[in-house]
Amino acid sequence: MSGRVLSVSLADDHAIFRRGLRELLEESGRVRVVSEFATGRAVLNAAASALGEVLVLDLSLPIVPGTEVLAQMRERHPALRVVVLSMYPEEHFAARMVRAGARTYLSKTRPPEAVVAAVIAVGEGRDELDPSLVRGGAEPPSLPHERLSAREHQVFILLAQGRAVGDIAVELDLSASTVSNHLAKIREKLGARSNAEVIRYAYAAGLTAE
Image (cartoon, rainbow, N blue to C red; front, side):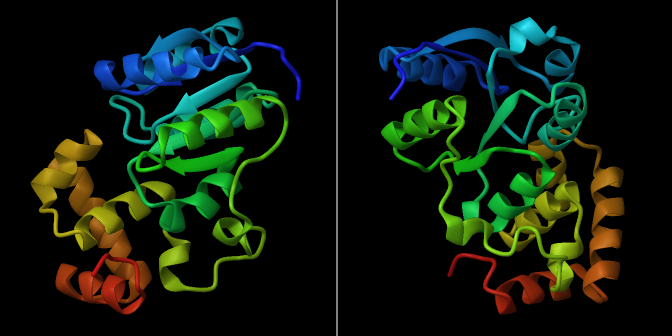
């Protein structure tokens, strides 16, 4: 294993979480955090040198969501290795985010040592992701919910978790009308006539916790 110190940047809107993650990564002796960003716009405005070799990216960023940041990083800085570290379950988002350009996807429920190991592995060019989470990732979507965009999928999962439209809007830093528009597209793609049918679909597909 290489002993080289990796340059890493962090994008998360919670300052306390960024501080804890910075300390955790730097305690390994293998990582130097070069930048921290609280919004998606700040990441997009950053120079390549400020991004480092690895960007640890949350999906729920204000102003510009992490999904859009990921898409633009793939275009602007193809050599940048992105680790998505977010609150959403790996089984629901991992394959989608890897298809979108992330090197790996981790839920914030992972043990701290697993997060550190994954960031280092990605920085060294080794993907750290359970193959079962991305099986079929290169195949075209076959189920209705797999045809949702990344943002629609976020709204879909939050609705399935019992969140109201207003709560989803706050969580994703969107207007209530934008959330409602996403829900209309979700219903159309799932063939559902109401939000209640969307929730029933999620349960039937095993996409919600019991």
